Length: 191
Ligand code: 5GP
Image 1 (cartoon, rainbow, N blue to C red):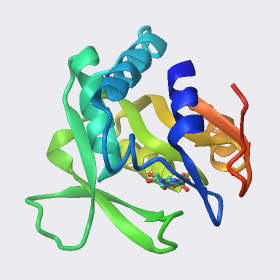
Image 2: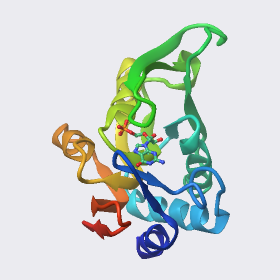
Image 3: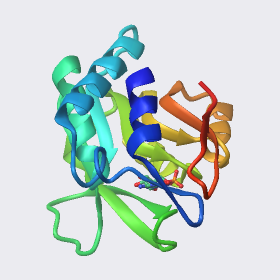
Image 4: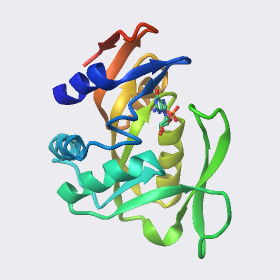
């Protein structure tokens, strides 16, 4: 997605440890026009697969998933990063090792929001080592539902997540794949 890649080059900042900061337009301050184009692009890419719900993870995935959902006309569910058991009834849970914070945390979705006949499109802002997506896939599996697609805004192709998720046979599409980035801020895309 060219406008996204242009924006990453213009406003993205490479931080130590292979972290790309895009907080001026994607995940802190938000450029809603760009989000809207991202939502449309996900709808174009996933137009021929069944989607009954979009699943994401708090916090950065929520806004992107909501704008995309307006094009799919389906509800959004976000997995909560569990600090308390303050959620009614039974839940599907999984564990996620955080790339940016280096900790493992539990995620949960109330069992009443995913049923076996659901066709789930997973959406997130970044794909790095793939742990967040694996956790979401695990929740979909626990519910007996089907993950029909995974849509990622920025995939860091130099980390293992994309390869691993594709090898599982998952229908994964990323709007921008970064093959290389260096401390001088040079970014090379793979798509
Ligand atoms: P993974 O689970 O694939 O290793 O990492 C994905 C999650 O880590 C995303 O939900 C995202 O919030 C965060 N993340 C991973 N890499 C980056 C990065 O380079 N920049 C930012 N801002 N977040 C990242």
